[in-house]
Image (cartoon, rainbow, N blue to C red):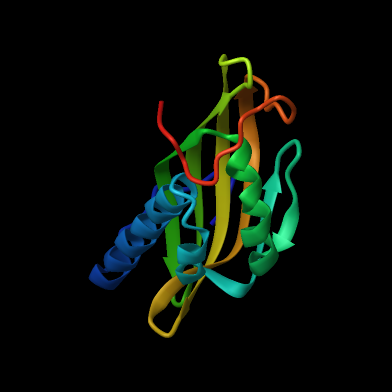
Length: 165
């Protein structure tokens, strides 16, 4: 699979179609867990040796166990919404590659009561492996397409749990 110039997918066997649906659901599960700060639940998606690279300003590249701790930085946001869309998945035996758009919203509350919103348009590129009958992400890279709005690190209210407005 060429990550930049994909061919038309398929035709897929019934088994490949089932694999694709499983990986799609896992992609959506990631967004849900991030938004609800259920980082421990993501152990079912990533492997202990998985490398996650948030290739964005203020991002980082870490093994999954360390990245899970790093994600606690989301406390500077009152809430987030990670909309994962257009997953293009190409399975091959027990491996697969995928690309998924992310439309990510990050809402902050400032100490003066005002709000700030950062809209982040991204592409997730994943390398998958099937282990013990389940698809897991071995490598993930999140890259920017476009960012609108700041991420503020001072004078913001922090939240241990997401709190919708």
